[in-house]
Image (cartoon, rainbow, N blue to C red; front, side, top):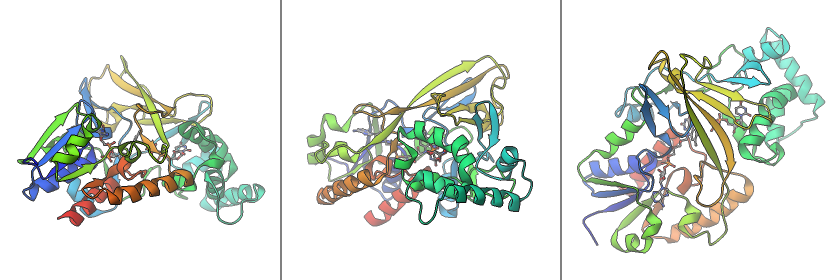
Length: 371
Ligand code: FAD
Ligand code: UDP
């Protein structure tokens, strides 16, 4: 045994919230992180005065005032509202699906005209009853035109699977609105931390009782850690923890291609989605627009996001929560229950398509159960 009460594997949001809360309660915590930086996928880094989101666009949003107050302890947030625009073969459409999209697409002006158009397309596609997959869910929500132009191509390249093989909940992440409102989220609170996300994790971990080491992989010395630490919070992949003994869970990976350009304003918006099937990337982020054009006037930084198959050793950015994987995850969760002194948390440990506010919530639930 050693002086620590907990070993936390992973300095992402889940591990860092837990570490912070444990330290506040007088516990001694060791955090190990295999990457060479803190903050997991919310890591941001300053380049030419612009906060660059290293692992894809991150917009904080929640309707839970407690979670909003919680995260505001660690950073001040700006008033950024996410309003991505879709580029389908050179035509631009507002997202999420709202009166601006419907009007641009069909020339309709009123909500009732838009509803009639969608109903007509839904009937023609003969979608009745409970949608069985993402395609049926999408058509039943917004009709075939939007499905074909703004959803099918994007979804199939993002997930590397046919929309008919994907679960319908993925598309229900996006609002459908019969108002001229381009806000991508319905939540009460939304914004980007001024100065980036990394500071949030740095502040959480900057507390007496917390020691952090980066560049350390748990699996290099798993047995020793299990022997030496009374309790472990594990936020890596649950199937990897169990050496894939029941088979591999599926993940989706990404490749980020970041470029500095000598222009003031490349695309006029923080996020542009490329929704056709042929463009190999799903979206381009222009980071300065998260901060209302901050940074050098002559420079900008953009990132193209290319979806990629996952294989062992790649970054597992997304769990693929279809029936096969959820069933397998449940079996791993059963094994996890028997692993007395290890708690599995976060997007990878709980194999859930969590957003940041949900990760904070899950970590606080875990804290409350523990103390
Ligand atoms: P992670 O951030 O993955 O942290 C886990 C950490 O554990 C990682 O740092 C990893 O390196 C480390 N680790 C894993 N295995 C080991 C090991 N064996 N040894 C040591 N360390 C290990 N959420 C939003 O709310 N809004 C958004 O706009 C948004 N956009 C997103 C865009 C993209 C492209 C992606 C991929 C995610 C997005 N998210 C967004 C989700 C958000 O990133 C996650 O909810 C959050 O970062 C998950 O935190 P976590 O701690 O569970 O996982
Ligand atoms: N989606 C789409 N077209 C878009 C944006 C999103 O079809 O222009 C679908 C796609 O299936 C995606 C899902 O909606 O995986 C959820 O989108 P979100 O923006 O929440 O994805 P994330 O930011 O988590 O990658």
